[in-house]
Length: 212
Image (cartoon, rainbow, N blue to C red; front, side, top):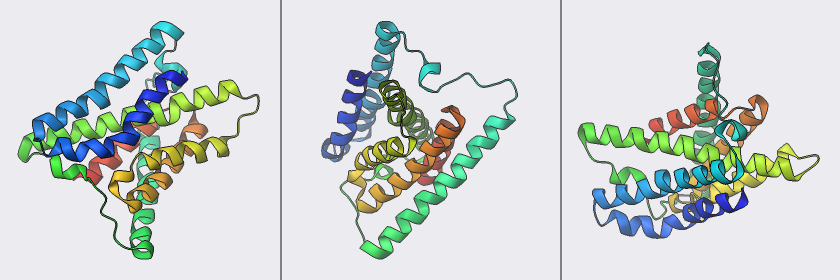
């Protein structure tokens, strides 16, 4: 499981160096590269985990939802509101205390206009919500919990939230701080419910709101 996490974590720590360059090459090139790192690479790694280690989605938190979807809708809304507020408050306070920090790259610069832009925003939000939930919460928790007799939920949340925040360094220090606190809230909800679906959906809604 560790070898499956490393390529994704490495790509997301390094993509702040090459995404601005790729973005200057045009939208088609950018979104093609984005598809490789957000769809192709995670899909290949998850497929290898299923084939080599018999790890299925339910093992890392994507438990099939119940027929009654109202609890899932309510949980997703809770994630959206609480993690979204954590993101906004942390980002705005960091701007006030630390001053502006624009970073090297902002995703909204690459969105096309019109209907195509709406479709790309939906793709970006869904792929981020799903893939980041799996690789920054579900799989790390499965790896950590299986390696410890008494896993510390607080230590786990601190570590993965720090890694997640640092993966957003290209958005500037206010983006890093906001990502840390939003991810902290999402981790706590996952550990409370033991299912990733509300996190995936809530995260997707947060990104849609941020992109709009």
